[in-house]
Image (cartoon, rainbow, N blue to C red; front, side, top):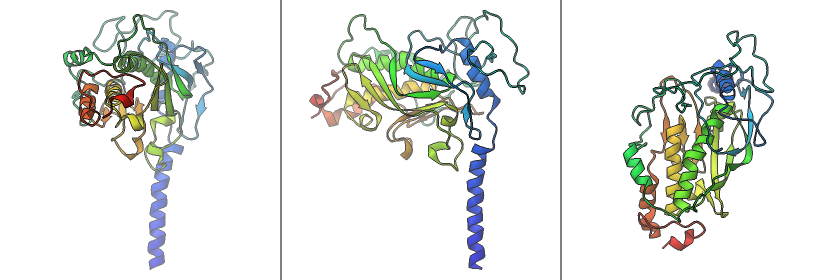
Amino acid sequence: MKRGVRWYLVGSFMLVALSGCARMWFAEREPWRREAEAACLQSGAVKEGPAVTIVNAIDGPGVCGADYPLRVSTLGAAAVPGFADEVVRPPGAIQGARPPSPSYPNYLPLPSSPPPAASPGGSAGAPLSLAPPGLLQSSAGDRGYTGSSYPQPPATRAAAEAIPLGRPASPGLAVAPATLTPPATLACPLVSTLDRFISEHVQPAAVRWFGQPVVEIKQISAYSCRGMNGDPRASISEHAFGNALDIAAFTFADGHRITVKDGWHGAPEEQGFLHDVQGAACEMFTTVLAPGSNEYHYDHIHVDLMRRASGRVICQPAAMSGEAAAARAGGRYGWRPGAAAVTGSIDAVRR
């Protein structure tokens, strides 16, 4: 009898394990992923060059992979146009791209100069949204944030950003793309969003808090064929499609480095910078997991563009403004709102 129970338990465990593996090894990659990659490249939102190259398609194992993966060594190109993956374009003009699969008969050649697409709720020629179809962006409530009141209303956010912090930025400060270390293999839609995220939010936050730009971003996971949190029994991770990036550290122009692991609970200006970064990420990505979200994200900020039928967006832990985070940490370090934050002198402000 005991032997029968034991074999039953073993068999049940094996079935659970195999069900998880089946999602990874035997499922088919959703067609929209290929279409979104092709459309992104065709739109010109991400351009090939020394720092961004199309590499060979990744076909598995199993459902894992990407049809037009990019090898990326910098992020944050200036004047990056958005890409709307609601508009599917064929990959015919993509250099080095594989020909369309016979299973996709609807691909047709594009005109040489396609008209500009209109953003959702906007007019032709307006900045395009990278949000998956059906994802509302009007407010935190509309976007389905988990336990978060962020983003703040534009007027509140503008007022907070007007508060002077750190050293004044040098006049005419030019912000170049930041080096991504090590180079990452990612899908085009994520690269497009990351470029805008770094240019429009991370660099302004760096200059606001430290008076200088970020020159290097350390990542610890890009494309990786695995389940969520590295669990083979879990649902497939967006990392398995190059649709996620884990950011672990930022290095500034003067060599000062902030890690997510230490800075999240570090000096006020470090916390302020990282919380501003996380809050901005919650406006641009569909999943953002930072320290405090769970035990697996204690040392990095995970961002991805997962599509959910509900349109729900996950932002954990609940985002707060950098000002609020720094003020909360102020008692421990003798910092107060409006106090200068000087890169390279973090220890000097601690009490």
